[in-house]
Length: 232
Ligand code: CA
Picture 1 (cartoon, rainbow, N blue to C red):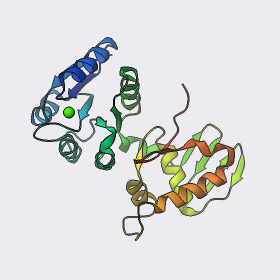
Picture 2 (picture 1 turned 90 degrees about the horizontal axis):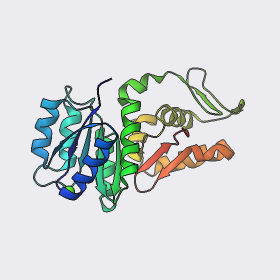
Picture 3 (picture 1 turned 180 degrees about the vertical axis):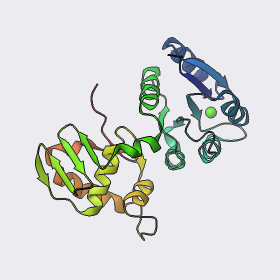
Picture 4 (picture 1 turned 90 degrees about the vertical axis):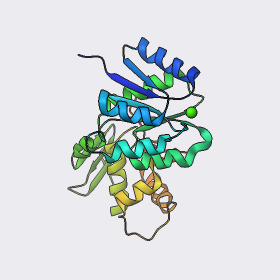
């Protein structure tokens, strides 16, 4: 199999070097550039398997690069891992909403970054996963949208339609972080007159019903929720 090709868009030379070194050591082919405009054109010409994108870039910033990549049918399937400062939580939410696949916050360990890259490359584009089917099984948990049935360790759990859709959606994409607004539009609908925090109410109710398995729904502070990834 060909080595996966990773394009790193990062203006800070030290961080760029650390990323290049560590991904190179893992056997990835690493391309690099220092600003958004260059990054965008290399995404189109080099067709990388994954992009590591710093959000704070001179000129065209990372969020804008993400928006353009994800709105272009030719490039939208290329996964993006954002690199951000902790103080850029609103940008993380924005980026994930635009279709970025994951993020790490600075300072990150090279190990953490490599792990995120592996996970994102393994799970492939979100669209394909959407075809996971009506029935999702994760450990002791089974969610069957078609039969409108959820079970934990073979015991039926009584969920509302919103809780059912929420659990099914999250469980269909383990390890993937979804901002609150994204979950709301997926499980309640775009037209719903609700605030982002409304999703918290549903998550709380869902966790209560899941009992000792409640921890499968993880809160990602300042960002949203994700379904816990199975230990490997
Ligand atoms: Ca930067």
